[in-house]
Each structure stands twice: as structure tokens, then as C-alpha cells.
Length: 485
Image 1: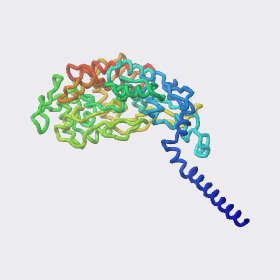
Image 2: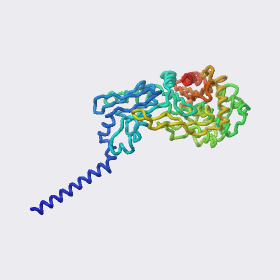
Image 3: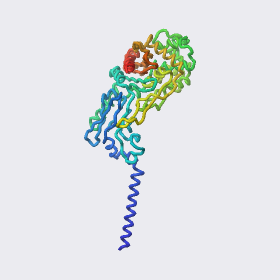
Image 4: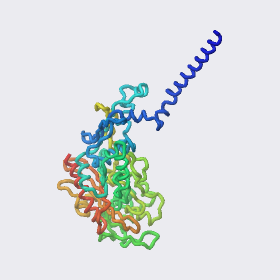
């Protein structure tokens, strides 16, 4: 009998050891995979079991959390949701997160190890800290000026501080209220379906996720390439470009909307926006030279983050000479986000030193202690400083004596460039109105802001009038708000 008891005890001991080993395997080696298993609802319950950290603009929170009393307790709320949707994105219990809510999710949800009081604290205790906060670089007055200026029309505004790269405004309209998507249930799924079905695409972030043909605003890039390559050595000398100008290798004549473009100087071509001169200069710079020049401004970069991902602005790397001519005036396959074109204006304003754009100034703990701080750093030297100085003069001339007069601000140095981009089959679509600009107060040693505006549904009777008439006044109001702060 004792022998059988011993055997039973030994068997139970083996089973106990096997049970302990299996428990250890699950808790130590398979914990991460089980935690991330979509069927594990405990993580979701824990995620929404505490209030989410906040996103701040100008020291004021533009987000919040409310306790619903449901199993997924805390639901995201938004103050001025449509105004700040292109900055915050949404945090939805049903559809996940986007934009800053996504890029800084670990801080906002309290799972970032940097929020813990000690290293490895979260891993050891398997806990999360109270949600941290995200402080943006956006200025409320500029955001509102851009939003009100667009007035619900399809379009976007991006504004950057040239000396630092701080994004001061990021607006896309028509917009939407992210709070409609925060929770669960039929109201959320109905709102999602309605927003996605809307022809105006309110959830599309046109400022950083939509690319447009930049039209004549791209001529600033081509001018920089021509000056840096010494294709043009004197901006005020005749370029020798004929008008009409026949696209290389074709019998197609490139028209000018402006008068007086035949053999015009580079400065005059920028002031009155001559297609022929700028197309010819792009061809003379050559494909390799143009590709290298556009790269320095940020075109063809698939990895730009602010911290949300930014759509690639495109300039083809393989083209025929006639296609290069069209690309050099911002047409053919050339496309850009509004943020990209704000970066072009910023590079000119900052002496050719293009700073990396960023939207998050710093992240903090729930109590406000800094966790991480961003700062200025150079993205590219976009052009020679002397080239930037020459382009600054030309852009000022556009505002003072050319097509950009609607952007002028009394007592302030303003540089700009209008543009109207053709699109659609045989250019049948209503043109996009563009304006890029920068402004410098006489009391400051450096420009305060660089702005890009695009309006999709702008009426245009001729190139550049639309940019000057529809987009330039919006840029003016944004620049004025920047100078008042």
C-alpha cells in the first residue's frame, strides 16, 4: 500500500512541476503574444479604464476624456474638434487612432516606459501610468485665421516658423468632429459611414496627406536650381527664352498667360509668372540637376514624419525633355502637399537652411514634467544662401509689384508667389489656387512665418489671378496673426 501511495505522490509531484513549468512558460515566454492577441479583451478594458492624456495648443487642452460608466470606461472628447482635427486626429474605441493620437499613443495612453518613475517599472509591475500630455507647436490664433479664411471650401493651409521648423498652423477643410468617432455603437458606425461617403472627404488631411500639382509656386524651386547651377548668374539679365516656346522634341507650344515674357529675366519671370522662361530654365538645368535640387526641398521623401507621416511630394526622376519642361513649372507629374510648399517658402525665408518641420514641442507626464522635447535641426541646405537672398528679393517684388498684392501687410516685409495649377483630363478641372509666402516684421531680424495655401474649388479666369485672389488673402490673415503673437 505504501508503495502505491509513493507512486501516486511522485506522479502528483511530476504533474505539479509540469503545471508550474507551463505557468512559467505562459507568464514569462508567451506573455507578450497573449497580451497582443486580439481575443484578449483585458488589454482593451485596461486601455480605456483610465483617462487619456491631453493634447495642448498654446497651453490649453483641446482634448479631454469622459467616464461613460461602460466596460470601456473612458471615451475621448474634443474641444473645437473640426478646427483641430488635422492636428489631433481621432482616438476611437471602434476605429483606432490617427495623426497625433496615433503617433503619440503610448504617451497619451500611459504605456510609454518613459512615463514610469523607475526604469523597467512598467515591465516588472505590468502596469501603466496615468496618461501623459502632448504639447503642440500650433498657435491658436493662426489656426483659427486659416480655418476661417478657408471658410469651409475644400483646401488646406500649412504655416511653419522658418528658423525652427515649428508647425504653427495645420488646417484642412471641410473638416469633421473627431468626437463623433470616439465611442462604440451604432451612432459611431453611422458617423463613420457618413463621413467616408461624403464627396467632400472631410477626414482627408489635405495639409499633409493630399498632394496637388503646385503650378507656378513651384517656379521658386526651379529658380533656386537655376541660380545654384549658374544657369542664371544675373537674375535681372535677359534669359534669351523665346515666346512662343516650343516644348523640346515636340511641336507643342507652351503658352504664357502673362504679357511680356519673351526673353524676360528670371526676376521678371517670377514677378509676372512666365511659363516659358521657367520651363526653359528647368530644361537647361537638366534632369539630374532638377532632381537633386527638388530633393533638397523635401520632394520624393517617403519617410517625412512630423511625427505623423506626410505623403510624398513627387518630382519624376525619369522624364523626356518636354516632360521636364512641364514639370519645372509645377505641372505634368509634379505634385506637392501644402506642407511641402510651406517648406519651400521657409527655405527661402531662412537663407536656404531648411529646418525639419515638427508638430510636437514636447511630451510630459500627467503632472507636467517633461518626458521628451523636440528642437530645431536642419533637414537640408536647400540652396546657397546667396540664392536664397536673391529669391527673397524676387518674392517681395511679387507682392509689391506683381500678382501677389493681396498678401501685402502695411509696414511688414512680405514675399510671395501665386500659382494656379491645372488638372483633370485635358486640364478640364477647375484650377487649384495656390499661394506661398513668408513675412518678416521690421522689428525682427528674421521672418516670423512661412505659409502655403491651396484652395481646390477656386474660380480662375487666368493663371495666378486665382492664387492671388483666392489664396493670398488667406495667407495674409495667417501671417498677420503670426506677427501679432
